[in-house]
Length: 360
Image 1 (spheres, one colour):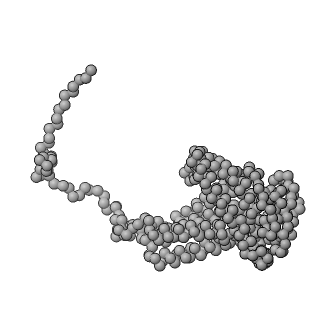
Image 2: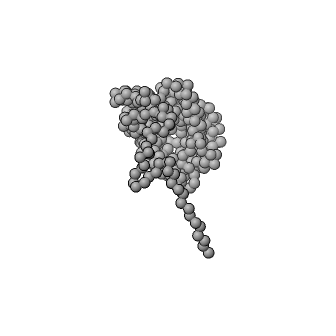
């Protein structure tokens, strides 16, 4: 059942402007001023570009520098450090990087320079597998791959669970990669390892949590320092590039602190990895001979007590000089990159001024 509602047309106000016959009436004028507070609006310069080629070049260069630091330059230090960690019969602990130099020279003369980069391809494959696995888990599950300071506690827990699963699944690859980096090129058997998933996952998550916490604290101190220095502008291209380098430096510093704190746990885990693999490593006491890795640890606790009883507490820090040498090389490369990009930006063009300066 329908009912018609009468519609009344509203009369046109004769005193106001009206649009009749395709044009406005003669008394209608288009306003040119709207009484808006335009004095507070700044003029954006024509040459302002958020995607500055200089910034793109600096970002790509810094990414390449970071990759070189993490994968190529640091790898010989990782090889030496791991060989020291797993050698229970070593008499020289190499707690300082200076004691490693003559050993490296003897290894180079005996086995060639390539012996310090053994297992490098396996580490690249391991990192690729880690990225692919974490991406797959993030797509197949509601677990986030990345979190921020605004993430909820549930998201943080899910993110840590994703990391735990990824570290656990990749444990066989970690074991195989470790064996490739420590075994001597003179005589060794290629092992197949599939164990210690839980311990590897716990160690990986612990390292990740500790490194993330330290990185957050360092970022907080860095932001407080910038707030107390109001002279820097967010539109300064030079400051943007330097901020990128600062963030990269904070990342490596937090990783270094976490590695120092968890170094004994890493030593224990590496020894358990190699147990039963019949791996032959280089004797870094002299750098001229090799020896087999033979152990009968019954677990983490037994491994810890055995190391302390037979080698002393410093036995947990065997090869610590390699860790110092590794991060010293990283700091040197970061400093060189900072100087180079600072000079490039000063040559390519002057730093961009803030918007408020362009409007005057």
